[in-house]
Length: 187
Image (cartoon, rainbow, N blue to C red; front, side, top):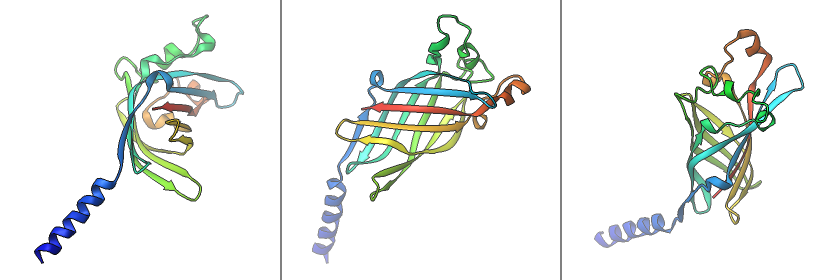
């Protein structure tokens, strides 16, 4: 019986150690978030970028199993208006939108990944914290390339779930509740 127990624990130990677990640090300079906000009833939009501070992606046996990412909310840009200075960036940094003085970082933590082997698709579940408010989100990467260590995704969030609202009710209803993100992560 003693030999059987030793063999059992040896097999469990070998199984645990045979899983290849890796953590890949985010290459911040090569990674980017492009954002887009639109008006509710017009064919007009604002767009720009926001930068990462740091992040990492964890895998086990080649499958994504977790990760976290910190975003520098003070880095919000809107290139179309940089020369004139009359774009939305200053207002986006104000307390009614992202309140970047009080909340300079947004954080995304991957909580679960569902892998669909037949189609090689990933459904990523995560907690997104903006303005100190954490809400669950889900997104589907559009590209996962393990050889090039790159992940791309597009997603939308409802800004009102994080208290991101215009300080004017009429103007708040004039802009779409959705904020779109086009994200490239390089590891």
